[in-house]
Image (cartoon, rainbow, N blue to C red; front, side):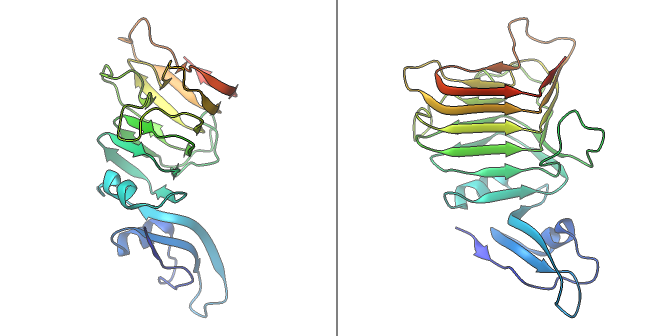
Length: 219
């Protein structure tokens, strides 16, 4: 789980990025005070993480239903979301992958694996730069195979993300008889490198009860 640390004053001109530098471990902040008199608040709404943090460790310690917020910077290495409903928000959560208004990115250089049944997993506002051939198809791979197996009746949303310089499929799901719930791919920008795998596709989505694919740009 996480330590709740809402409604604190973190200093003049504090931002989520500066607050994240002052904390260690899984600390969840709903709101914080923005003035010394502690009369005005701003909202964070999750567990703050800075680049250089062991992101997999944060996920492993998180509780079912937690929101993890990535401050700008690069997060290296693969991560696995196994058996938990987790939301991961990058610095550009809520901002379309095609927008000119995106700020500094939260960048993941690695694959994301999702497995487990009856989950709700959301990945929003992150830039992916994994440019290797994936040993398991998909930079975001929801084919299961981890401790909690395939993602039967799991809802997966990938939105407002950028995938740049890919060689392989961006989002891949398992083609088994176990059906996902809803697979939603919304407002993403997917750009392939010059040496992309000729069989790669932006979204390789199998066996879902419902697909929502809209607002995506693929080049």
